[in-house]
Length: 278
Image (cartoon, rainbow, N blue to C red; front, top):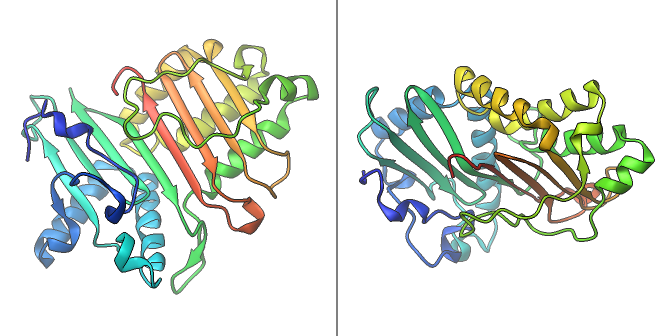
């Protein structure tokens, strides 16, 4: 536990623990006993929606796949290498926060007046799809497909407006608090109602990770600023090569970047920021 305003809260990373140059905050999952592990699972399953909990479980599951690699001990790939920290005293009366993360995962949540503000949040996954005694698990597949669907729903002129020349890694990730890039791409104000709703449905894949009341309040704020929102895209219209897209509005930045061609399994990084709360 830390004071709510402790500056170490900005020390989050999406890198494997063997590649970070600072200690992650809180207690390591691998150092919890059985009772504490159950308590952590209980906390995360209540603090997040079913969708949100399934996403982080899928990301940690991919880490189990990486832990079998001969490189795992060197870089720190392990489902035990995730950390939980609390900032301020959890309370219904005071502002407090929590942080959970490790490789490919960083949740930074502030709780105020009964509402959860989930920002910044990094979600990544590699391998992008895997199996564990059942159907294939692909945590960020819906996020990638939603971007492709949005781009392909646009007419040619709007696609040309949306297209940006560079295909960056996410530019607003760890260590970039306060960075607000200049909006690029196609203005959403000219889109049809159906296209705007599809955009909101895409945004909800991130925003919907917390409880329904918090998610709905956040989506209402985003909808109010939709006419000042832009959609930027780099990549082909098919599902073969690497892609990048950014959704940016007055209070919102979402980025998703594929580190490898989708047809080769992909390796996805994404970032969500609520510009009113980190």
